[in-house]
Image 1: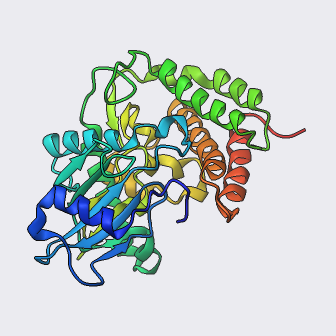
Image 2: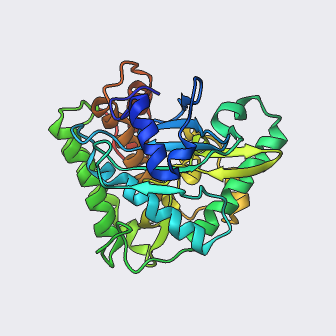
Length: 328
């Protein structure tokens, strides 16, 4: 996916990064040692073959001068912290960090290396898989997501803190940040911004049911799942993690909006019963939050293709109707 957030670097800089991470004797030689991985939407990622044949992935955060949405600030630091937590507390397969550099000496952003995982991206191969095989992967994602959500936090909010004991306040602030981002760039939602705020306030009591902060991925969709031989090989892209309500995980989105896919197999793997009415209301608010981001980020990233913007605006109107607001 093309985006101005992708911080591409010259071969000379990439070689310098390899030297810093792995030493001068492993700097690639010749041609064909680097290729860009095209599936990402935010960071640029390169597949690099070192001189000794070891293959790695290099992720580089967006350029310092590119404006990103509020919740995306410091995303690579969040990912490194999430990987450490998941690796320490669960058996979920996530990338090992070979080397991370946040000095801004070789380029204007954070970057890190991890081993290359030879596996298929579920978003790419999923549509061609037999239904039973795809269902099996979805169940595995649900089970893995439950393990991640088993990690408890001290407070709701960012992994680095300070956080808040009240999920209602934290989530309301999260949505407000998104709305302010949209207003700053005059993004047309198809809805008045204050109407969205009113809808959130009307249903905010549903958030009070959440009392225990848990680690949530939030962005665990098929594009962040690598699979091989019937098993999850790796879960990638953890830069949007925080401590919150597990129900905000993407796998539950389809319980309210069919456009996000069928959640049945995910929920079976997760071991989650059908949602209660209060949980359903809460999940609609989480869909609202997700769709606001999907609309607004297209302006920040300067998408030239309007497909995501158009689809997200339609779904935003759908979830607003579920929350009691329809156009007059």
